[in-house]
Length: 131
Image 1: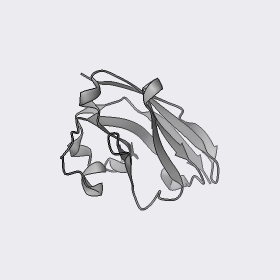
Image 2: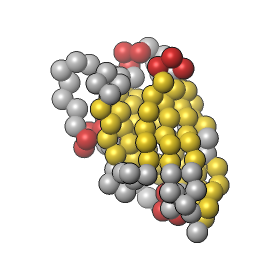
Image 3: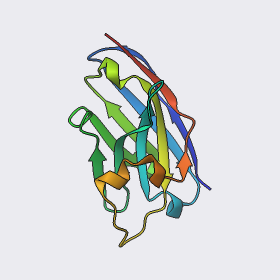
Image 4: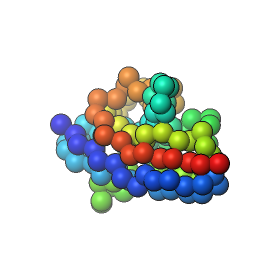
């Protein structure tokens, strides 16, 4: 079992920055691929950024590329999402997700940002961006 606890959400004005953190615990083998998703009221859960821990490949939604950066700190068992140049449309609950990944697994950007691919989820942290 993998536990995920997000923090760092808050309210900012457009153009501002926030840094989200996700503290991860549980078997390393079950969290080889991780990602950040977001969900706005009345909308589907949307993949924002993903990372393949083993190969250190990163994946981003087109809407956040160049503004958001996903990173992982193995020593602290933390997944981070640095969000810059925030826009009102970035508002939502941000959730951390994890799943097993292994050498030889075919892992694409499409899969990395697909919520149905992930087994473990945190509770989320709210981000509000005002204009």
